[in-house]
Amino acid sequence: MQAEDMTYLQATEELESIIRQLEGNQLELEESLERYERGVALLRTLQARLTEARQKVTVLLGEVEPEGDDSIDANLS
Image (cartoon, rainbow, N blue to C red):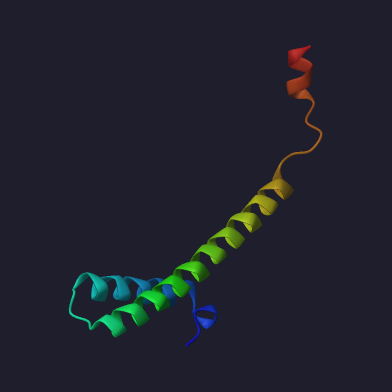
């Protein structure tokens, strides 16, 4: 399955599994390289989703901020 088609949780779990496999030092060189490449792809996907989520939260927070609150400006004068 392509990393982009996985849920965040699925991608995280697979990445954790890959890390355990690589740390176990039980894989052949070729398999280690394949698992590493897959891990990098998963990590990139996860980072992109986190960035997107942060941007959405920032937009949503901007929408709920009170506008035109002059009470702070009045206190500074």
